Length: 357
Image (tube, rainbow, N blue to C red; front, side):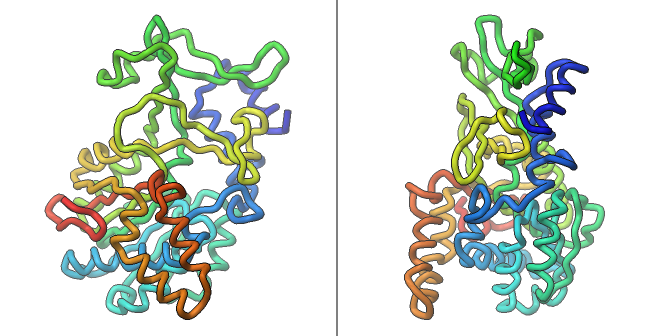
């Protein structure tokens, strides 16, 4: 058992079982041993690769999408471009480079990166040291600092927020927890108390063994974003892997060295994530007074924005790498179907690019 696993085991011994959400929070964000607090997880030398690291086209198209929505809403003053969980800063660097084509948008743009990891924030500062817009950092999304329309991007951010898991038994729903077994190792167990009140009524009846996952923190932050957009204008673009219809099934996973690993065996040494419930996000956006469009599959979304044409131009001046990157982003058997995009706009705004009525 590693150092963080021992600390979690000691916590359980002192205070009792912890929820899956509590375990994820400790494993990912413990200041001394948490996954995101201690390392750069991205790229070939890391544990996983995100769309912006695959190709510059992703960030370029996202930046131009924000500018087009700004234009469609009458080019309001003091736009704010905010990214949640910006990784190495690659998406934002590519977006701002593309936005040089829209000087009126770029001229008064304020950029904010929301990053909880000191290690990643340092990499982002280096990547964005010479961009053509002022950049600020926050450790959490705070709309109090936004005095104009909000254009927010969250790419593979919500999947890393802590989830709760509930398992259906012959006695109803019970929350999954983390305990220690007879040998002192971390293990899953079910809380004895009923958790029926935490599972929506439309998820019953359910077969025994069915798993329901919820992410209260994702719903809360999306509702706050939607409330800001409904009040001040702008748009949010959420891109992540997940599902758009209610389903049962466990999606919590650990990834290390680009391979799946055991969730409990080495906390802090693997990335933890779970599939995003896009229907729940759309409901949260409506609760915040905004309107959600989508989700649409990432392949369809990027194709509508012109990724094929952009790849063709890059290929003429570079190599076949652009076409291979395009295929990885849009092909149904790669990222094109599993990953989805959801847009949030004011209730009276026109449908944003890439989304239909």
